[in-house]
Length: 238
Length: 238
DNA sequence: CGCCTTGTTGAGCCCTTTCAAAGGATGTGG
DNA sequence: CCACATCCTTTGAAAGGGCTCAACAAGGCG
Image (cartoon, rainbow over all chains, first blue to last red):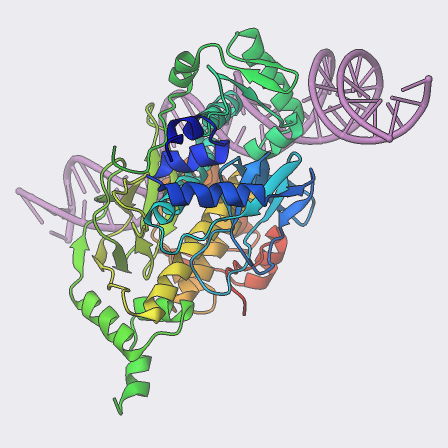
C-alpha cells in the first residue's frame, strides 16, 4: 500500500480508462489487474460475438481493436462502432439477451471476462458510464453517416478515436497506433474504399493528418476539431 | 379482479407495449395506469429533453411521437431515432447523467413520469428490454444510413415503425397513423426533403405504399420486407 | 521469391443535391 | 364562409459528390 503512487504509474490502459469513468477503489483495481492476468488471446478476424446468438458474459478488452458489425444479405457490410482497450463487450441488463450484432477482432487481441461489479459502487458506476459512452458514440456515428460528407466523416471519426484512446493514455500528442485498413474505415463510414483513399490523401495533402506505418499523427488537433465542428463527447456532469 | 379479461381488452397502447417486453404483474399494470392518468401534455415542436442538460427523471410516452435529434453548428439536423407510445425517454443507470441529444415532440403528446421499477421484477425487465430495443434500433439506423440507398432507407424505416407500433397495437393490417412530414423523414434518413419526396412517389407508383391524410397503408408487408432484406429486430431468446 | 492483402489511380456514370418556384392543405381571423 | 398566412408537397433543370470498374503498384509474409 505504501507503493500506491508507483503502482499508479504502472497502471494498464484498461485500468486507466476505467478509472477515468468513475472513482475506483483499490479493490476494484486489483480485480481489474487479476482479470487482465487471466486474459485470453483472440486472433484477428475472429468473432468475439455472433449476431443472434445468446450473450453469455460481459467481456473486457485488454488490448487490440474490435468492431461491432452487421453484414447484409447481399454482402454489404457496415461497422457500427469500434471497440478499444478498456471497452466492454456484451454488457447487458436484461435476462436471456441475444446479440443484436456480431463483434469481430480487427487486430490480434487480449480479452478477458469483465470483473463482477456486484458490491462495487465504483465498477457499477464505471460500467454504467461506459454504456452511456457507447450510446453517445453510436449517436455520433449516426450524425456522421447522416449529415457529414466524406471528408468530415473521416476527420471526425479519427478525432473520436483519438479522444477515446486518450482516456486509456494510448495517445501521445495526437499520435497513436492506427490498425485499420482503408476498407475497414470505408465500411465504418458508409463509403467505398476507393473514395476513402482519395479523401485520406486530401487530408494528407493539407497537412491535417500524417499516416505512416500503422500510426496516425494529427499535428493540429484543435484546428481539425474546429474544421468539422467537433465537440468532445460528454455524458456526465463535471 | 374478476373483471381482468375485460380490463385486458381495455389496455392502453403503453400497457400493451410494456406487456410485450416482459411479464407484468397486476401491480405493474396498475402503476402504469396511474402514471397514464397523471400524464402531462407536450405541444408539438417543444423539447422534452435538451442536449447537455442534466437528466432528472425517466419519462414514458403515453401518446404522440417524438424524436431524438442533434443539430449541427451550421444548421444541419439529424434525427437519431423516433420515440413512440410506450417508449422510455432518458432512462439511465449512471449518476449525474447529462443528455447526449435533445428530444423534440413531433406531434402533440402526452408524457408521464415512468413508474418506479424498484421492487418490480416485471418493470425492471421491461425497462431493460426497452433499452436493448432502443440500442438495436440505433444500430439499424446506422446500417440504413451507411449502406442503404434512398429507396431502401425509406422502406426500411417505415417497416420498422410499423413493427414498433404493432407492439402497442397501434396498427391494423399494415395501416397506421403517420404524422411525419417529408422534411422530418429526410432529416432522419440523411436525405433532402426533395429526394425523399421523389422516392416516396416512386414507392407509391409501384404500389408498395399508400400515404394519404396522415395515414400509411402498406398493402404487402412481406413483399416489402423481402425487397429490402428486412428481418424483425430481436433482442431476447424466444 | 512469389503470393496475397492493401493502397493508388483514371475515367465515366449515376444517385442525390441544390436552387427555385409553383401548387395544395390546413388553420385562423375577420 | 371567404381571405390570407403558413406549412407542406411537388416539379424541373443542372451540378456535384461519391460510386463502379478496372488495372496497377506496393507492401507484408511464409
